[in-house]
Length: 235
Image 1 (tube, helix red, strand yellow):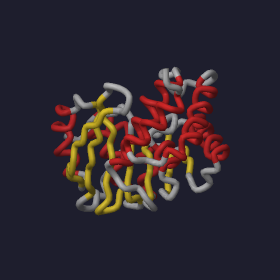
Image 2: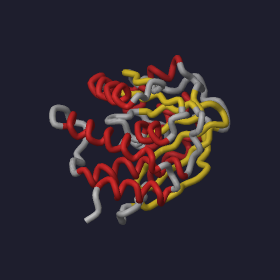
Image 3: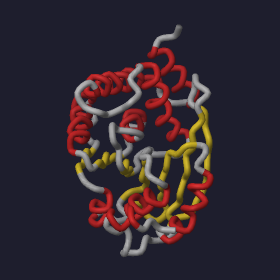
């Protein structure tokens, strides 16, 4: 049986990404699993599964979007996905990790300090509130959150520059969700540019990246208060 290190290196090679980042990625995984013993960060606890279903899953984004030197905000980053693997693999990206739970942000700051990721910003805040003072400040927004796409777009697209994009990690069975979100995406100044399915190396797991290009400014009425977004999502 191949080691976690070998599986991760092979996966990175399949993607054409820097295998020299393997040790940093594995350190992040170790810190995640250690903290997970006292704090609920992930239901995936086997090191091989963490390497494949977390690290390599997130790394796939870099095969479909060039984040080199770009400003990126990871909306609802949770335990640091996809933002932390993206930052490790593309250290020139100017990354902001945003989450509403301060304990998670505290953990991610510890990870950044340990790994020497001194340019990464770990921010405690709600996306709809953060967006008010950071409208169209980022080249890219990313998210692997479980919220519906129309909700995620209202939280993320206001922070994306015109010409930038929202990179939404979704399941391959999100066709109906995507169809229902198209009107909301247009209202928010976006347009679906591509829907790209991929298989995580070493597994038969298929996931999807939805690339939503920001084609015009988001109206200042968005994002609304989260209670309103949740009660009356855009349709």
